[in-house]
Length: 311
Image 1 (cartoon, rainbow, N blue to C red):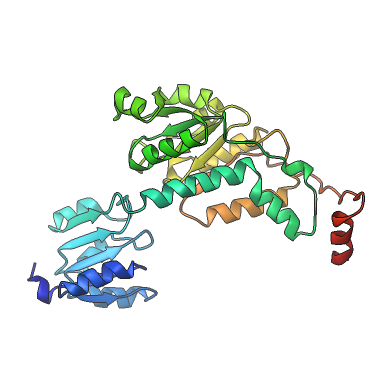
Image 2 (cartoon, rainbow, N blue to C red):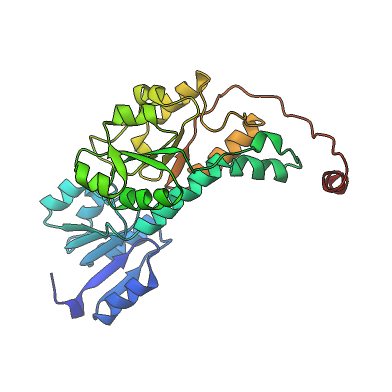
């Protein structure tokens, strides 16, 4: 690789300006192809020494073949599943990642999704936007006193455990690479995955995507969950077998509180909002539609005024 003063690094996806400034401060020529076409990216890589990506750019064998000078591929994130590591290794290209970069963000997002699910926030918001003011179906519950199962007790899983204790939750965890002493230090009881699924009110996934974890939550695991359990996935979507999740939903087992969602439309709207993000919350529900409930008559006051304003 040439000296830093003559190196060229291509940034293929949105990247922190602080990081860009560090690179330029070291004398590196930084070229951004954010929003560019595939052809423009290929042209920029023709004489590039480094490439920085996030999640959308697929660094496969064909892309590497168009980058004869490439020495380093760095991912601004935890996993490297978007990079063909064997192909990069064959080409003598170093693959890097930033494992601690999004720990806090993923941890806080996990709690955002858990709170949204136990309080039915997506469904309630959809109902209000649709002109319905019905509180009954959206009565939620608290995280306090619930049993949280953490699958993967690494950086993010550990951070989730620390914060879950502040919510007054009981913790159990499953991770074959973590000692009981480490789990106990985080306030969690270490158990096998099958036992965790049977024991928890909420299960949250924090494992990397690989051959051993792809589809690790399938039909058998979903069937082991409590009928009202919540499943939150802020890791990789492929960790959960989506097709089997839908079949289980069709078998009329749902997650959440005993209060049923008001309609299939609300369910779909909530799922679309969650599925747009790489970290997705998985809540199983019935696929059979329910008739939309008519707006309940108000006893007067705010509910009556709100209905009048919308007519």
